[in-house]
Amino acid sequence: QITTTTAEWQALDREHHLHPFTDPKVLGEQGVRVFTHADGCYIWDSEGNKILDTMAGLWCVNVGYGRQELVDAASKQMETLPYYNTFFSSSTPTQIQLARRLSEVTPAGLDYIFFANSGSEANDTIIRLVRHFWELQDQPSKNVFIGRTLGYHGSTLAATSLGGMAPMHAMGQSLLPGFEHIMEPHWYRHGQGKTAEEFGLEAARALETKILELGAENVAAFIGEPVQGAGGVIDPPSTYWPEIQRICRKYDILLIADEVICGFGRTGHWFGSDTYGIEPDLMPMAKGLSSGYLPIAAVAMNKRVSDVVNGGGVISHGYTYSGHPVACAVALANIDIIEREGLVEKVREETGPYFRQALQQLADAHPIVGELRGVGLIAGLQLVRDKANREFFPAEEQPAIQCREHCIEENLILRAVGHTMVACPPLTISRAEIDEMIEKTKAALDKTAAAYGLL
Ligand code: PMP
Image (cartoon, rainbow, N blue to C red; front, side, top):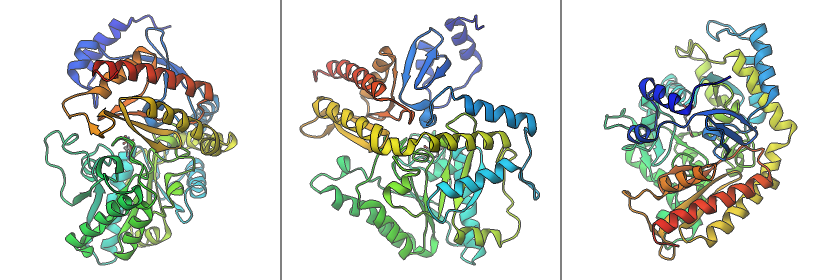
């Protein structure tokens, strides 16, 4: 029985707890919001409010909250073998089973798995493995990574350097050398006067320009999220990924699809790579792999990569909790749920189209929404000052943050990213819950638009 009051939690939190990606001023004034329990798509706060969580925690909880199967899988594994490592020729049954299951659900050819604990770690691992791959083939100069502006690949120093969200995330520090970026493929913002298909080709060809500028002999890999998530849900035009892939092959650059958000059904396929026809050489995944119930991440790689890195002797890289047996057991049970309940097909054929149609109607009718982006069950509503003229809000104004607070007043969680409102609900969301999300989002958008004199 929790007897601590919200004010007491907030006071303790202020005294002892440093929060990532949180404005300390706001935290000081308002105090932290304390969440106590959850079920399905709903989460309860310490004031007893029942809140519709259409961010699935932080893009994680694909199968929804309150899944007894996942609790049972964890407790059974804790009883039999709570922990063992993957170093020095060791393995455990759940690690081996999960590696095999992942090779089945990932795109063809990605049959080899390395385990980590977070998306950031998975991407750090990829940086090291890819450089090792080229060194082992006597091409050590091939060590530069090309990512994209507004790309997000994690929060360690290397993953921050790989991502394209500096200066926002660099905290004024210098990042690592050896990481370059091309423009994000956001047609609505950058493609005025061009068709989406024309713009998609142009945005992809920026990769070729960058490779030629750096020299292909210096470029190790290109990395992109199939749909950019933390950058504001940027789904590229249909021409983009095929052209990126063609360029990577032409110059012998490895292709990495970061599936940390897109993976495990989010886009209406098992992976965003399936949705866009991407055939990556390496693929990091996390979040939906265990639906966030325990921390676990993995890197899948194809035979070309695994043959080389496996043939090069000891890999001096790994984590104490790589392939944690309990997290692996939960991930296996999570994949079983996704399969048994047909969640991937459900997103593709049923809830995804319903969600998009409802959001599109809202976007079309609302004066503060310029564009709906996304695919499957991930969506971004771009807030604009002048819809007719595609005029964006200036950086110093914060309509999305205001809108997020209005959502909370409605007992709804949406995320604010720049000037975009982002929704990414559990894949189990029902039509009635989507209707509830739309109604509450509209109320929050109305209040925001009214504050800017747009309604
Ligand atoms: N890659 C992508 C695409 C992500 O969205 C994230 C996290 N939002 C990461 C990597 C990093 O994952 P983690 O926070 O688990 O380190």
